[in-house]
Length: 142
Image (cartoon, rainbow, N blue to C red):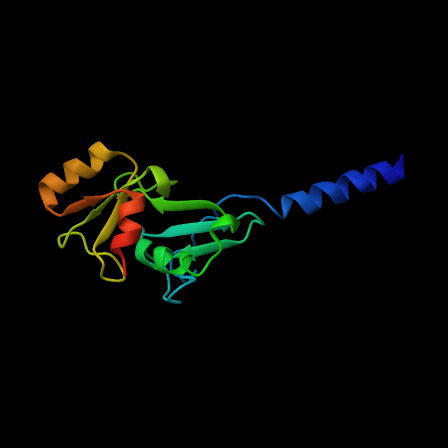
């Protein structure tokens, strides 16, 4: 019985260390996995989580896109971007993106993400700019 309890505890410990989920960003403490700048801006961070649970934090969406190019696509489990409007992480694949000179981002691409297309269109009507999907923004960012 004791061996079973030990085995259960060890199994739980092993699996809890491999969670496939984003981590909370510690603004002013965490650094960007791509450019190593400290993450300060709460409107533009992003994260990649691998299938093994390794988390990569970025100060901007453009840093995540550039770093992703060096990764094996099959190893990526999650790609999350901060919704500019709500301040919550959303899946990059379903997000809408806006490049607007009136919405500066940390690395200068003026790129922001929105969880809904209608939110992105609303901000675009006020701030101007060009809208993108996840697929098209990856091609657009050099």
